[in-house]
Amino acid sequence: MEKITTKEKIFNVAIDLFSKKGYNQVSMREIATEVGIKEASIYYHYSKKEDILDSIFEYFINRMSVTESSEEQMDQLLNISPNKLYHFGSESVKNQFSSLKMIKILRLIFIEVYHNDKIRKFFIDELLNDPIEFWTLLFKNFMDKKIIKPSNPKELAENYYTFGMFKMFEAVVLNFPDDSKKIDLDPIFDKIEDHFNFIMNSVIIENNNIINDDKSCDENSNRGG
Image (cartoon, rainbow, N blue to C red; front, side, top):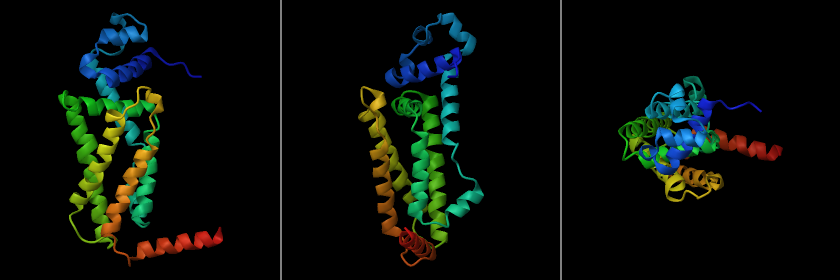
C-alpha cells in the first residue's frame, strides 16, 4: 500500500473538516492538530488556507474532466438515441462521485456558496454555466438532427440540469447522513435520469432515423439473446 504524504494528509483532513464545519469555521491550527503535526509545519506545504481551497478546486475539476468527450467522440455519441447517450453520461458522472472525497467537496461547495465569494464564483462557473452551456449545445444538436422538436435549447438545458443539481443538493446537504460513508447516490441518479427521460419523451420526434435504428438494434440484440 502506497504511503500517504503529509501534504496529502493535510488535503484530506481539510476536505473532511471544511465539509463538516464550513470553510470559514476551520483554522490552519485545527487542520494541523487533526493531521498530528505542529501548526508551523503546515505552512511548509500550504502557505495559507486559501491555497488548500485552490488545490481542492483543482482536484475536483481534474476528476470531473476525466471522462469528458472529445468533439469527435461527441459526434459519434449523437448518433445513438438521446436516452442511451444520457445513460452513458450518467454512469460517467456516477463513477466520478463514487469517491467519498468528491462527495465531501461537493457538499463543501454547496454549504459555502452563500458565504464565500471564491466558492460562489467556482460554483457559478464550473457547476452552473459550463454544464448548462454543454447541455444547451447538446439539445441544439438534437434539434438540428431532427431528433427532438424545435424549442429553446437553453430552457431545456436549464430545466434538466437545475433539477439534477437540486437532487444532489438534497442528498449531500439536506439529507446528508451522520455517517458520510452511508450515503448512496444511486437513487438520486435514477431520479435524475427519470427526469431526463420525462423531458425527452415530451419533445422527441418519434419517426427519426436515429431512434428507429436504435430500436432495431435493441430488437435484434434481444433476438440474439
